[in-house]
Image (cartoon, rainbow, N blue to C red; front, side, top):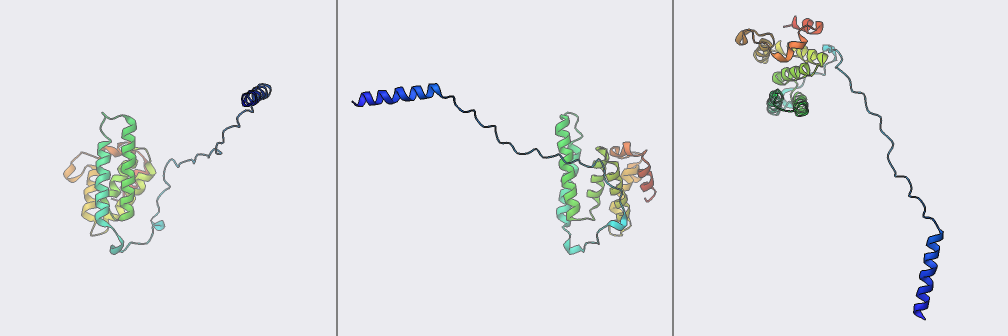
Length: 187
């Protein structure tokens, strides 16, 4: 009797399966697409009046900024290696820029970070950003405690002093830009 009951259930189930069609699977749930943000092509022109107020010495992290600026310089130098694939070089430049921006956040008066970030922007074609940082370097050069360090960077930029004609190649494409020429008059 048990076998007849099981057979009847199996037969009933088989007939029910044969006569009903399975429901199609629901469409997959996907999030709504997010519109990509349009990144700015370059910076807005710099205005000395728009600067934040001066930072007191105790609120600056000078040693951290120096270490970050040195790391940024190393990454930028490593990105000049033509043996690396272009994607790897771009990643090194991006990492260098991130470190240099962080260095300037830690110490807004860091001459090395200011100059190297300007050269980074000049290399990637963000002329206005590079010009803004060079204008900032001109302001830093007027501070007595930073004058010597800023003068050394300006000498490298223009191939003066110890660099005698060896100008920084990162700025070659920027030299014909009128904005660069305007900021050059401040040095």
